Image 1 (tube, rainbow, N blue to C red):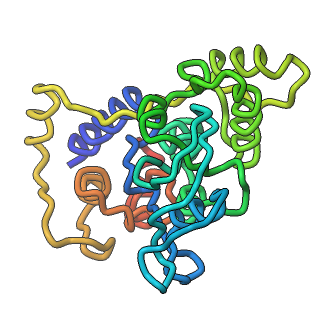
Image 2: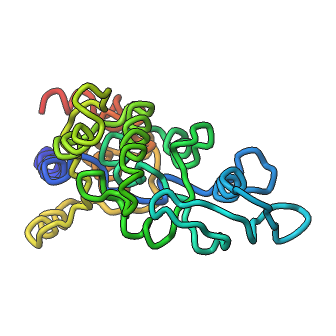
Length: 261
């Protein structure tokens, strides 16, 4: 069975080299949520908070905003119809993921996606501008309204520092150009390569030689070998097999084998 242990580890090492962090999945950052249970989710809370005039709700329960007045800093335009607005994560979720959020707990990712405590974190902006921005950092995209660039760069920097997120060299260069070289900036680190790994035909053939399959087994007590536990952890995504998240499943079963390998 030892040859299967070597084969599984080969596939794991290959995938680690191709992708230095888990691929981004928007569902890992759940939003919008109704944190205070007042029937207004995060989007509605932002629309209410940033409204500049009279506001109209869909019903007397005040759960959903139907009309108001908002100023979009990205385009320097005013809007009265919330359907023309997106609530933007100033630091996009995918950018945050690649800058360190991939290693966060589910609760921290959820908190980041719905942060109402800091006014620079979520802002109502024109949908068209937000779609143009996508997941780009300041080196790749800046708002059409140049008068907002300094505030945008300041907010971007504050969000990243507050949440312990890093910035790549191109990003830092742009931030320094806007804010000056004396500005406090996020720690420098190359953007993580968070890609979904696509196996080659040869690797898929190798995988078929492993005599295990994803079935109903879910717990360490059901595993008959370390090889089987590794297979279920990595191929069947049984994350509960690796409680301390060190990549080694079922410590009692695999600890000795991994050390010898």
